[in-house]
Amino acid sequence: MSELTLHNYFRSSTSIRVRIALALKGLDYDYVAWNLREGAQQTPEYLAINPHGVVPTLVVDGQALTQSIPIIEYLEQTVPDPALLPTSPLDRARVRGLAAMIACDIHPLNNLKVLTYLEVELGVDTEARAHWFRHWVQMTFGPLEAMLANDPRTGQFCHGDKPGLADICLYAQVMNNRRFKIGLEDYPTIARIYDACSTLAAFVQGAPEAQPDAS
Ligand SMILES: N[C@@H](CCC(=O)N[C@@H](CS)C(=O)NCC(=O)O)C(=O)O
Image 1 (cartoon, rainbow, N blue to C red):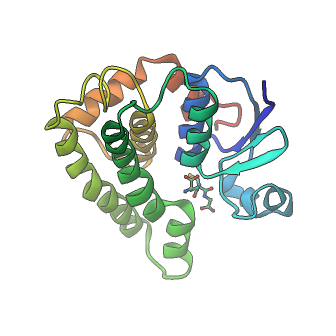
Image 2: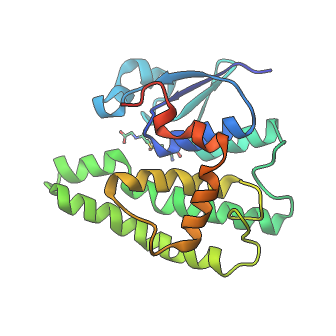
């Protein structure tokens, strides 16, 4: 069995994704916290691990893996059971598409460094930054809700009745949304899936409040 070290931050939604995947796969790992609020991701110590200066990084037997989705794909390939992706190519593409709506079309716009840039470089105030964050969530959560609600392949979770990659991304994003007081009233299917995820130990274990650096 490989030795795993996860470099991450309790509140980071990309870190939440990887923690949940590790928990679903039943993998133990060493937890190393980097406080993003204090800029720890830009220190020479962290940049030596991941020159991109973002979390998470999963170190596998001394080799650093970056980017949450490729990290989860690595875990999926090396520990296939329980599967986080369906078997048929069409279904896999659906699940990856749902996950990418969040990972590619919400997260990069609402990342800490983007919000910091808006504040420091462009002088955008707190309320306008919150508006920005909510806007980009709503732009994707509306269509995501429709795509989930109108597809018979949606079950208890995003795809069928077992949690997978799309649920991991959805759950982590909803956790992130809480900081900007974005409720799920307009998104009943997303709310139902989030609630289903919340009953599972792996998702609870991956949540920010369960981490040693939670504050
Ligand atoms: N696409 C990357 C994004 C990684 C990322 O941006 N992580 C955030 C935390 S959720 C981060 O480290 N931000 C540091 C910063 O903005 O300075 C992934 O999925 O891993």
